[in-house]
Image (cartoon, rainbow, N blue to C red; front, side):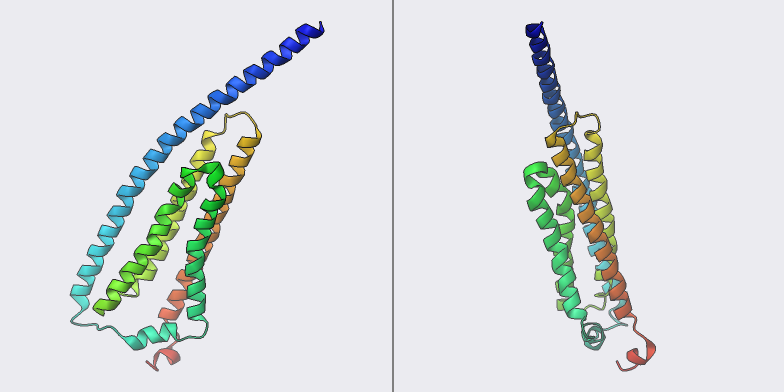
Length: 223
C-alpha cells in the first residue's frame, strides 16, 4: 500500500513537471510572437510619427519665419524663472534613469520584453533633444512646439507600453502557480507602476511648461 502511494505521488509530480514544462514552452512561444508584433508595430508607428513631426516643423518654420522671429527673451522668460531649470533637469534625468533602472532590475526575469517596452520611450527622449538642438541652431520660432508635442506623445507611448505588459500578463493566466510565475508577475507589475509614475511626471512637465510659456500679463509685459 505504501509503495503504491509513493508511486502515485511520484506520478503526480511527474505530471505537474510535464505540465509546467509545457506551459513554459507555450509562454516562450507566445511571448516571441508578441515581441515580434510589438517590435514591428513600434517600428512603423515611431517612424511615421517622427517623419510626420519633421515635415510639420519644416513647413511651420517655412510659413511663419517671415512673420515670427526666434526670441531669446521669450526663452529667458521660461528658463529664467527660479527653480525651472533645476526642475527641468531633474525630470529629464528621471525620465531616462527610471526606465533604464526598471529594465536592469527586471531583465533576469523578463528579458527582452522589458527592453521592448521601454525602448520607444527612451528613443523619444533622445529624439526630442535632437529636434530641440536643430531648431535652436536654425533660430526657429517653432521651439515651443517640441516639448508640448513630445510630452503628449510620451503619454501615448507609456499607455502602449503598459498595454503590452498587460498582454504578457494575460498570456500567463492559465499557467500553474509557481515561484517563477509569481516572480515574473511581480516584475511586470513593477514595470506597470513605473510607467504610471512616468505618465504622472510627463503630465506635470507639460503643465509646468505651459504655465511658463503663457505667464501672467504683468510678467509678460516685461519682455
